[in-house]
Amino acid sequence: MKKIASITSLLAVLVLSTSPTAFATDADGNDTPGDWVVTHYKPFGLWDTICDEAIRKGKKVERCYIRYVDVFSPAPKFAAQFVFIEPEGQGYKVEFGIEPGTTFNGASLTVNDGEKVVWDYNPNECLERGECILTGQEADIFIQSMAGTSGDDPMLVSDFNDRHGTDQVLEWGISKFAAALTDFQTESDKRGLR
Image (cartoon, rainbow, N blue to C red; front, side, top):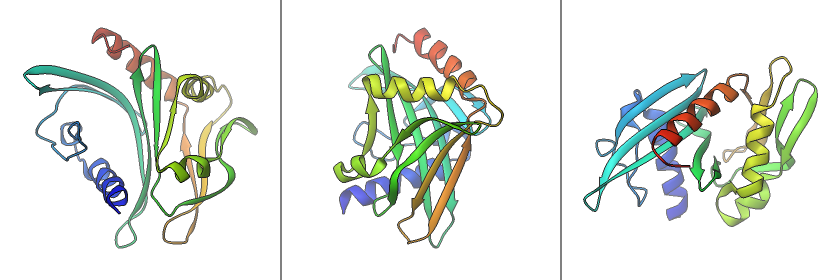
């Protein structure tokens, strides 16, 4: 139950943000929007690159990330999904924000470059663990498949049944993702985060 509340709270914070300075959580996942100060914000369509900083135990902590948030069902049957990418060592950590109770039909998270599927994933496997996170080579393959698309109108597609029992298909345009990734890498490198 605590996990459901924390994911729902995180989604609410992501969604209700009306400016880049309003989005933040502390190291324990508590909502502390006034605690983080945004030092870089640049939108690429609906993909955002953001860097911010806060003081932790007397020291400045910096972070950079790429995010995409989709509120596909407003209140009273609120539902949303997000992708959150941050540096991890020399690579990346990718978190898919998927609400508990969501079910997918097999490999239902795909990167489509025109008619061709260049990456696919079965989120049901990670949902059984309670969180959907890619790291290492898995994260690299996902990110490169998104950044390397060259066709018209490439998409990240999520085909699922939401926690309210409604069939959903989300199609997120990724034509500006490569530019967002370049900006994210540049800003992360400036701060020594990669």
